[in-house]
Length: 517
Image 1 (cartoon, helix red, strand yellow):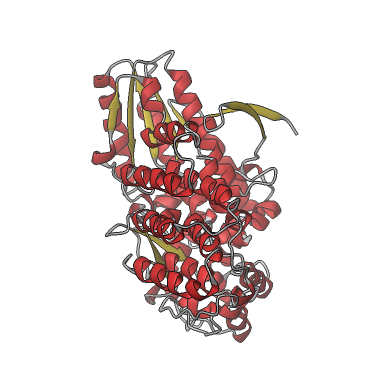
Image 2 (image 1 turned 135 degrees about the horizontal axis):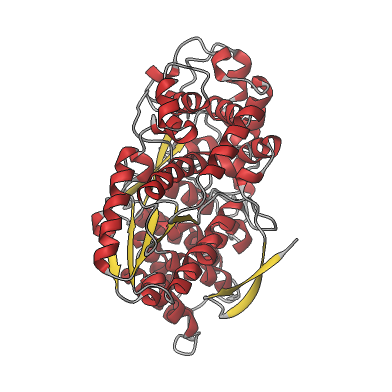
């Protein structure tokens, strides 16, 4: 397989990167298999004993390549909790990222419809038509070609396709305007999906055609979200793909508006835009065009995140990443003890909370701290500092949980329970965070600790052997389909049998996300 060479900012060396095929280049059968993977259904980090693949496989077997419509007794559009929603806290305070686990019957049905051969050919042709023009898309969904997960492969593309490209543009342009969309997934107007897939005129002419692919996708999205026409679910590779189709449609509108323009270039990575020009005034004119076209599909730019840079090189790399590289390059010469290294990470987290650079540095520290084999005199202090890093930056918690599990494993047996209780009590200050609860359960659950873990988070209750309802399936008439959605299938191994210490490879997705940043 052909290899390209890319410079790693973190390592300062040239590394080979295997070619990563685009999802849109897959056959319809391969695309279906890709979207039906557990890691595609939910593209975040969960402990290894949680997997959605058994349910997806069971549902796919019942649907047999068909639609959920043949198995319903009522319209799911009228029910408020068909999909399951949970939250991840972004700042330890009042900023939350909502995740939705799409009802498996709706999810598999949508995958079946999208990847039916004729429909998949429509998608492929439409995405091909979006290419070319002033806007250069750098976020076409890809499939990992080696050991990497698909999500990590996608994120690696940021550095390769966006930052490297941005740096190269410094030879041609003097000004960079950086902006992104506010609440992209929550704002997307679902009726714009058929516009994107078929063109606005064809979509409007066929708005009453229930078999038109765009209308089928739109209906599936609404079915899990109480019939709402604003917003799509966040948390799956499938919805990432749908969002990319709509954003590519916006690219097309921008390209049409700026067809005669030759003095500007736009790089887009998902909902992130970089406008290159030779004057700030020109960049602002183009920004107005971008804003106007995004409003067509219900989106708006984040004014507070719009930044103008007169030096393209400086503006091409995120400030937290540059600071993270500097911190990493200092090595351990000024931080020879674990405590000092943790304090440096803590200080960095205060300046750049929840940043990609912080996630990378914490992930690397998780690997390094496992080399500590003797209980240190300051163990309780190390635990306190690591916990506070996770409190301020909850997105780091999978790796922080690994750090804590190793540190507390070194404590005397009679002190482990007390330390974990203190950790749990402190992290409980993070409000409404089901994602964090899942990882707290992972570190407390192993039988080696002899602790109990009670939680109001349904995912945690399922791991504990309870059977709360994640999805509303009252609209389903088929007992076979209801049986396929048995939540007990989510637990593929006994959490209490998990090791006391979370090894770095157990948070592989977290590490690859962070290290690819």
